[in-house]
Length: 249
Image 1 (tube, rainbow, N blue to C red):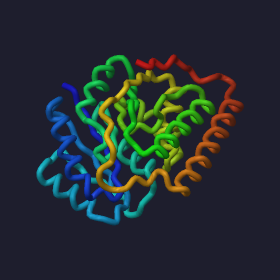
Image 2 (cartoon, rainbow, N blue to C red):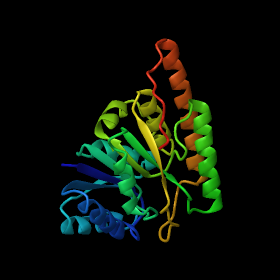
Image 3 (cartoon, rainbow, N blue to C red):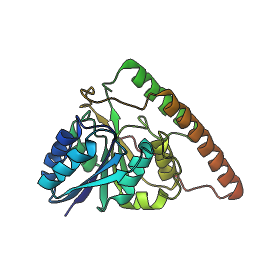
Image 4 (cartoon, rainbow, N blue to C red):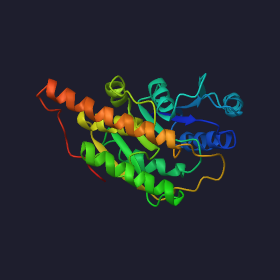
């Protein structure tokens, strides 16, 4: 039987999280009886954690993990991925911008890939966020070789083996987390497929935090450190990492 974890980071998502949990429970319960929903509250200052606790009383599959202080997006994702218990791990955000029925697109490719990555097509965000996202994906692909069309799309399906393999190599706990994770997974030889998602929606409640200047500056610093780390590793070990082509689906 398919067993599946859904992992969601949340920071000040009181307005979204209860409805988001209901959406996830509805989507997963239609697929399998063996699932869990892991919500990582990254030091929220609002009632996010309380809303999750209330949802957990209605749905025993829901589990709350709390960071005492805000550690950053990547830290919340890392905690969720490494705390999940099922063989397949579905990762998404808590802002209700995705049509969860599109998880079937990921599952349909799960037999052919170790990671299935969504691409928002079209992406329903303000122009500046779309521009930043396009530029970030372009930069990562230029610096590390082709990785994905939509690096930070929060709609991914990952085999547990991938998480266990790269978890100790991913050092970023900020906005660079997804880039590091995908680059390391690809360099470890895991099969990657990409799929277009047509159901991306504008955010209707809460505030996005990724476009703040200090977040962007931290991301660029982490990306440069990561590039230097890989160069140093390749010089120390002349045997190149095994690579396989990325299948774009």
